[in-house]
Image (cartoon, rainbow, N blue to C red; front, top):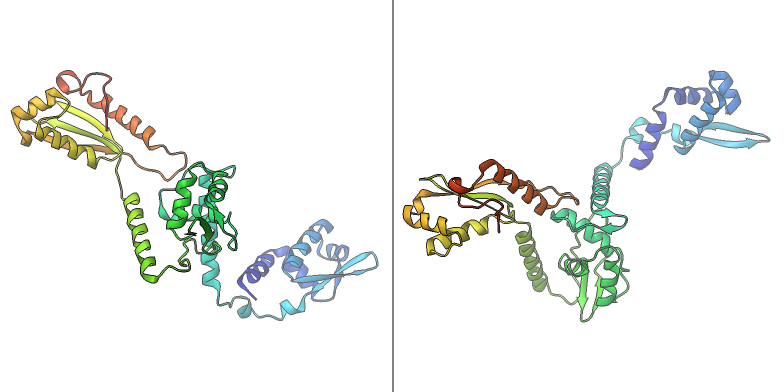
Length: 328
């Protein structure tokens, strides 16, 4: 008996009325009305429970003229509790169930009416989405690029990105001008490790390494948020925001050091007071949510507005004019 059958049997037994019915059937096979009268239950209730137990193979029925006669399934009742709870595949079953639930959850989050909203940022979720696209292609057929793009475009406009990633992640292989699925996607193993024929071990490792490097770069945390440059002497502030804070902060510092920064007042004070009297600080970062409806640009705009209202970096308090935004 496998784990699914065991669970079905144990669930079917977890009801007092069903145990009463089973106990009554130990004496002899009986029909529904007889069991109902004997157990003081409604015939509809007895029928409902018998149907559940029949589905678990605990009972079976035969027809005698106008009546359905129910009896115990001796094959099940001859099993011991040890047999019902002993199976070698329980860990795999649990893992498969967990993976199936997770996969279903991801697809529900990123697809609406069979249309992909966007490719997930997280690699594990992206693989699940790519696997879903790979299922659109038959493993024993080859396709030209136009056919591949057309099938992908049915669910996502950016078919070029999906096609490229299907190849990089090993779901598809390109041979000349033809494309094919490397192996049928498996729901419990989303990342294909099989290599296309004709590719050597060395080449495969090189390709994998390049893909990993590219993925690591894409997934490297690029913090979006709001930053400020503050004059320690007079307290004046320049407030800015960026989708990648590391870049503009370094660039601003370089521009000030070389005397080419666009804000003349800030550049003049930098020259007068010196670099040591200016503080570069990230005041807050956007908390990224892996949600199809999340828009990082909108979140950054909101965060920037909050800090502009809070610090009011205008006039004597800052290097900006009202309404100005330093979005980099």
